[in-house]
Length: 130
Image (cartoon, rainbow, N blue to C red):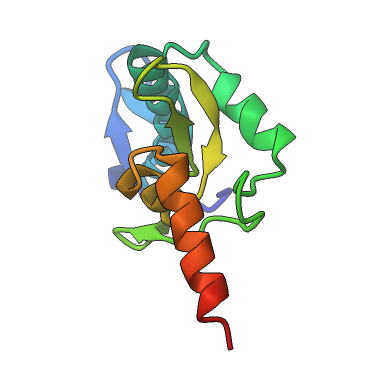
């Protein structure tokens, strides 16, 4: 932040000559919230879906941060923060397909990947279209 702050605003660090951290607590929290969250997400995604580290980010970039079905950016929030796009995968083959917004992922999930059911829903909506 570049601000002059009292020494109490810096965490203790026995490895440093003055015994204090280089960055203030606020800057340290901001850095950790952003950078460590990305690393943790990569680790979780690799364990659950078998993606390589950085592969989620590459998929997100390829899709321009938009849902593969509706083409919109995610709007659903969790604890005040917009959620990441969900990793859509086949529950039969466990293969990762693409990234979906929370709403589209729920639609696919509630339909149990049943194409016939989804087509019936489309036919129903077309029948009752205004």
